[in-house]
Length: 438
Image (tube, rainbow, N blue to C red; front, side):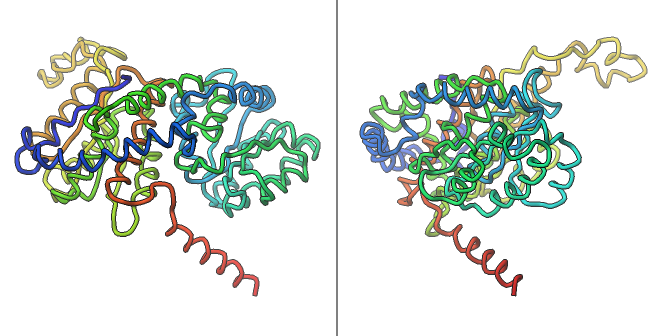
């Protein structure tokens, strides 16, 4: 497996009364067993297409052709979308852009997931519209924020290259049918790629929604799916929930919520490139499980920064949290602290412990220290560790948490794939817009 999954720090045998007793874990695992049957059935009959995506390769050639066209024509590619239409792509893109720009030969991807006018004013001053492409993503084809973004960007794009140039630098992704986005795309003869109606936005990262931006950035989409497939196959071959890491994770999380009041689940990566992964997970968990009074609140923290801003609360605040520390094999990597500088006699030996150590040594020590400190303070903590952070590993982690979420929903008795409460705000926003015109 591309990662190690250790739940010992969540169990009573390790942390005492604040952890799950073996009998409590067994009872929750028994409730997870029907979810494995569901996954087998959905995979076999194809009724949940996200489970078929890891094995697919037939669609990648078409996507790569589209991506190559954007790479060749554009210095910037704007990805318009919100929620699941954006977070998966941002998570994958973080593998190659660490905040200093894209790799040589690939355009700078900019994910625009809000409608803040100030951001768009800054964008207008920052890009060459004649060398800017757009991927506009709306599953429904009616997402107000995304369509507003797109409609406001059409004029500068046309001004820079004429209407004929739009079809060379703009791609739309939406469901089949007479949808507003598709109809707008037809007006300018833009290429339109079909969003599978049965793949929900927050589960769409392994589809063209996440993989087209990834391909534009030069990432290996097949490796993303291969990593996801490894985790999926392991779960499909599990005869018991305890043999499936995602099912085990779901049972621990829901068991701690029910038995120990752990109503908050904190994901704490110690890898900068997994920062957006935490945001992707946050939507997945919250929107899938927060129904009918059920669910736990997901929090994305980050190491090492939150050792200095959140750890005090985590260690000495309310016992209402479960922690997942996500760490990498960092020891021995990175630049070395020069011994003559750290060991300068003027420092009086205060930094001797850093002399000759690499930056990765410090990261490794701190991530392990945080996990161990949480466990010693009887705070339920699981550890997920990866040897490397690449496309296959990220695909594996994403599939783990998608499956964990699906299994958790089954334990709770909620539908993981709908989001009915979200619609109220959309209706009210439309009402306010109508009132502005009166």
